[in-house]
Length: 113
Image (tube, rainbow, N blue to C red; front, side):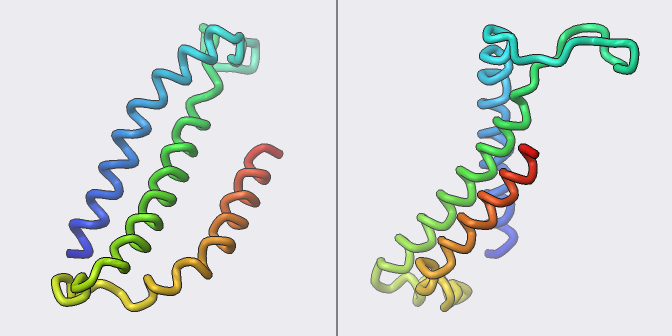
């Protein structure tokens, strides 16, 4: 059960990244947000710079949807009977969310610096 959940999460994040990267690549090229080639660079053509934003966005969306899904799943009666591996800490997720948001916010700030 844990492997299936982990695999589904990774597949969802990869598919979402696969959808968002080409979209943000076009946006970057249209708005001129790209890295120009230079003497110290190995690329010969301009490289769009928003691909990382797409990957980060898919990660954040996957985490947010996962937390939302776990908190909603805990409100359905009988879920713990159907899924014995359903952790008891899921009921405490609302207390975890501010910490997770702070961690993601700080990581984003560090990446921007």
